[in-house]
Image 1 (cartoon, rainbow, N blue to C red):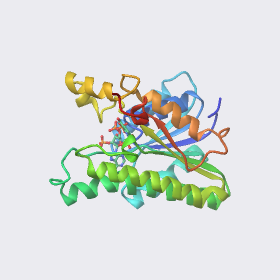
Image 2: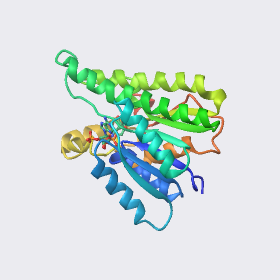
Image 3: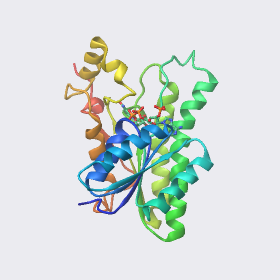
Length: 255
Ligand code: NAP
């Protein structure tokens, strides 16, 4: 198994894509640090792993990815509990739905703080500890199709995800020689608590289905599989890449 006894840290691990990464990494034998703003949610995912078929193990942590002290405590706590650090998945994220004209400075800053600063801080803390220990590692960031193109009413989200793509390249460049690979995935629309409201609206749900060439919504497992591919040790020459997993959304417009 690719992840046997490897330590996988996941921010936003209590929900949606992050949760699925935790479950699938554990199923491949990983020791998982489930980090989330909501400790109860993280504990639920860790318990699900504990009740699994004996593969993998998990520890829940409360983390606020926007707070350096909380981030450091998460990475340090994960290393102590799991005994090592191998893969960090930055899945914590939020988004606004408001026009660029009505977006408040506070909401702009909140989305940038969670999505962009909240990718930078855990990555920096994780890389620092790996480098201090002389160990290799992998970082996988959650970008988005909206890190490649825009959509209305999501100025901060779009800017933050374009930022995540740039940060991924920058970190890949600076950390490659140290044996740390940094890649990102760009999901299409995935059915998670973040998008559930749209899924429940029949008209919106059909529209979203239709923007994907494959004419369906993505599932968390579609993205978790790609994340685990990027984080796998065997995938040793891929860094600074953005892997689009969007059912063909960004391939072109249907005519
Ligand atoms: P989700 O189900 O809402 O999960 C995100 C998790 O991050 C939630 O548990 C959330 O907690 C947590 N979080 C929020 N702020 C945090 C903070 N400051 N510190 C730590 N954790 C925090 O969302 P998802 O759909 O799985 O999305 C995961 C990632 O994929 C995000 O970066 C998102 O932008 C990206 N993505 C999602 C889609 C999609 O269609 N779903 C598409 C492209 C990219 P709260 O619920 O309490 O806020």
